[in-house]
Length: 436
Image (cartoon, rainbow, N blue to C red):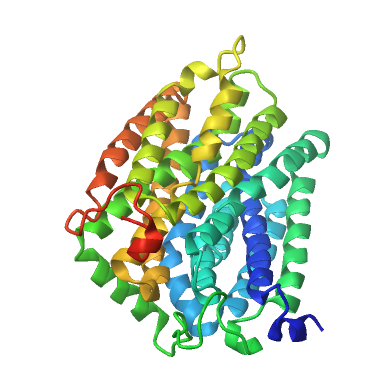
């Protein structure tokens, strides 16, 4: 009955159901990726492993999450979104479930690094990009902002709960909560996820009869498609600027704050639940900030939006070491401020990719640029843990990351320089899209 109503003049287009399902899937996979931050200290206490040892599988996980992205885009086009989502979730259920049996650090590397890293990589942000350009002919920035914010919502919903379960019952029951959420997502995708609008006799939301579908399945080899996209991108200065700045984005978010803020809070005498609560606060405000960023990316210059995001993020990281002072309220203020900026970079970055390389290649190109993001995250997750093991403090890691963000703020202004310059507040409806 629901599908039949979608084929008629029902006000709710099935594209919104697809967005909800994709949002839920990304929420649950975000919860999987966020889980290690509340496992670091319990694993350290139970097995006596160093912070650097535990950071290694997390680093591999983050690397695979990004490096699989370009090939995941090719497989999404070749084998279909629904099939890839189901395969990913099944792999995550297996990997997360077996984590409770870990007794040696190499087992953690195998499961959390390789198996779970591969599973989350198959449903990375590339998934949202492909879904949006397949089901929507308009409002791409706004919808991508919503889907990008799902990772923040995953933190919001799961981290405080998981931290409380760890505190009250241990880390293994907390892993069981994540498995239950994955199974629920698996059932929802199995029942309601659809491949493309034409499967239901629909057009993409906002498309006219004369419009050509942007994304269609392809019989070409997914690996070939990914490497062809890389070859095309590598010839462009804009590609390297986007990849380099996104490397810094990953280093300063998932790699540093997402992985090490909770352990840093514990180092300063806070409870694990309090540290997880700070990440949840970031999740709340990132949900607002990233959604607003998507709306802004359809209207303002994406280069100047990125300049603002990276610059403010850099300044906040430079001042983070003094925010841990328990006599002040600087740390909650940092959480609010940093949360607004957390993944706000994604919508304007995707918009720039679409404008420079075309909507038909946006999934593949974003896959490679997002791979750079996760290389930065993976490197920093390990390097920050290494610095903490060597120096007993994260201060230098915060300082280096802050400086890199300021470098990124300057670099993004060079993107699209060879193209026609447009005013920052140009109306995109008059210019055929958001300004560069």
